[in-house]
Length: 151
Image (cartoon, rainbow, N blue to C red; front, side, top):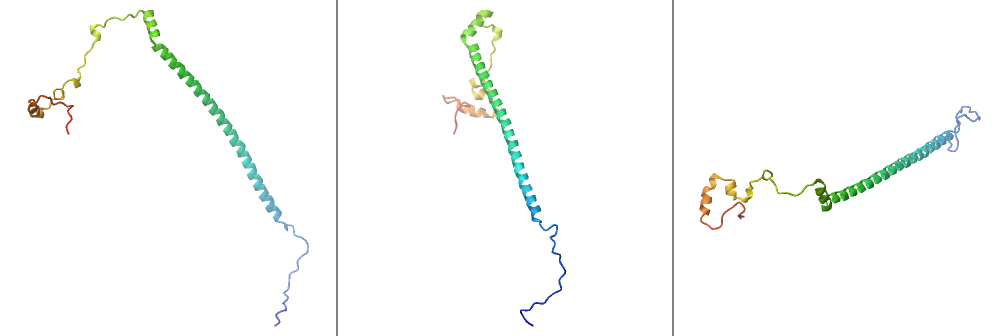
């Protein structure tokens, strides 16, 4: 058999007319362009939305700053008013206005409290088991108390 010869196969008859769907790349291009335009549109809408939201937050921040400055002024005014009301000139004026002369206290106004830190610890909190230790220290001139530091 000859290498350079080609066998002829029977071929089906084909028409030379162009087919209707011969250019599918146009539809692919339309789909790609529509996806790109949709993405650009979504990015544009998102940017408008975020700018609007940022503007609203800026207005809210300015409002809060204004309220904070107002509160600071109010606090300063209240401090000044407190200072004025606590001043001796104002107190003296109120004493004269309401006739609140200073007078000695009555006996019923005085109360006495027993302070436990003014007496030795052993007398404030007696411990029956420590009687021997207290008796052993009575011979020394310096008394033993709860405040003695022992190492």
